[in-house]
Length: 131
Image (cartoon, rainbow, N blue to C red; front, side, top):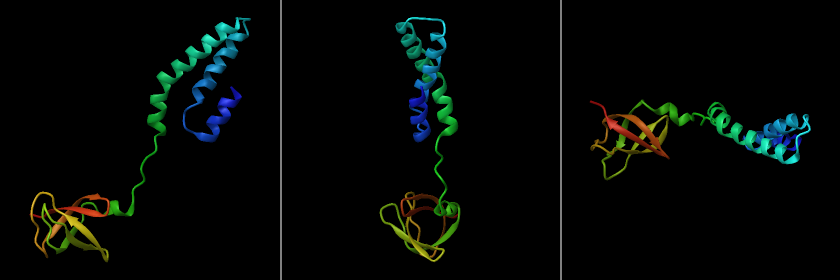
């Protein structure tokens, strides 16, 4: 039990905590002078039940959230194209002094036209023409 708690404390990966809790169940049942086989069975059952019923709940609450990046702040902003973009050819847009590759998957957008950033894929802005 101690080893499982120690491993869990070092990794925070929700892998050994279930076995540590199963060991607590086995320790509790051992107080009643139950045979080793029954202790192992209680350990296995308790560990499995804890894994099945509590892991999804804990995983949801502890899940790692992807931090927002500075590039995410560009979504929804308006840019003026420096080079024409079309479904078949990438263009260019300058925002904040940085020239980005601009892609327009739905329509052709001419140089100098205003468009809105709807997505960022890698180092490319996905844009749509402003109406």
